[in-house]
Length: 281
Image (cartoon, one colour):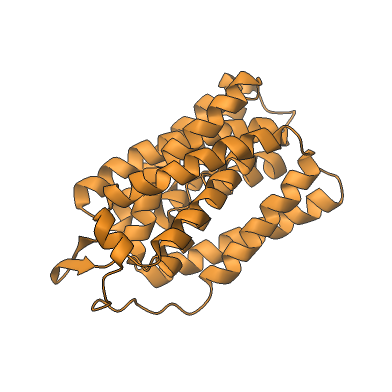
């Protein structure tokens, strides 16, 4: 990268970030899950600065994609706001831990999280029964909802609210520690544990990750780990990619999204673990 001028490097960062934002919006992961490995492995950026730039871009991703999803009627705003209580507290805990751990340890944790997420997402998916009995907790909190399908509006019932809430604290901790928005954990928790339809899970995740990332970004900013020269092209690129991904989501198939999700994060997981174990990060 030393042969490139500042302008060329900025343009390259922006275009690479477009791809990260596109994948993040389609899968509900947020661009950070691709962006942090891209910046550290591809551009040689210090991991804590990469996490800082990623958190800024995650905020932009959520803001751009969430507006489109809310307009389409997929996002369950009430569930998102309820679960955000747990993720915000977790994000503050994760950002505190990031200052205490070495970058190699953070890289290994990052890789392990991605690897486990790839395994879970590659499991055979079964559509949740639409005639499931209402969960008393979800009913009391009025979390059940509906979303648009080709056959019209389809209602669904939310399940296992306490377990989902606990998993969201873990998701928030990983967001503050790794700068990924933790969409992987959020989507899996809402899809597999709370049994929301997959598109509702991904879009509600996009709605939530911006608030979670903002909590962690405040801590990174106070410690000087957010570089405007790095964060600006990354944020603009991820925002453009996320808007593109939001448009494509309407036409995408859930099974295809899962395959893209698992392949991308499996490759990144292996690279992050290898570099963490060999001390290259």
